[in-house]
Amino acid sequence: MTSPFLRGVACVILALVGGALFLFSVAVAFGWDRGPFSVIGIVIAISGLGLMFGAYWLVRTLNGAPLAAVCLKVALGLGSTFLLVGLIALFLRGQDLGTPTGYFLAVGCLCVIAFQRFHSYTREH
Picture 1 (tube, rainbow, N blue to C red):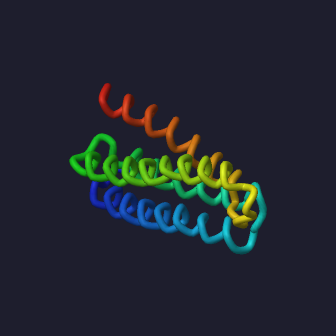
Picture 2 (spheres, rainbow, N blue to C red; picture 1 turned 30 degrees about the vertical axis):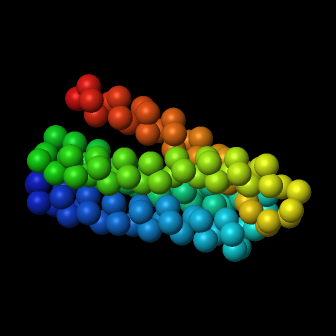
């Protein structure tokens, strides 16, 4: 794909689908794959973030790169708060909240690491 227009359209589609998948993973963790460690929810969250990174990668050399980078940073920042939710649920575990604690801890840690790595990558390039 050498056309900037097609790359931009693909970027928007990938970013929207990736964001929707990332948000859908929360519903999966609380609903279908309900358990202390929602593996399916984690896989869906990783694939959603991967699609959002793919959207950034398509336009990294174009004028739309900062917008795609902001979208990914917002998603990673939101995902980073999952770590706090997971830690709170871990401490309140005795009350049997039914919270997928492992999902929140895994996705939160992944997002914190990815946010730091992506932030340093975008500062260098």
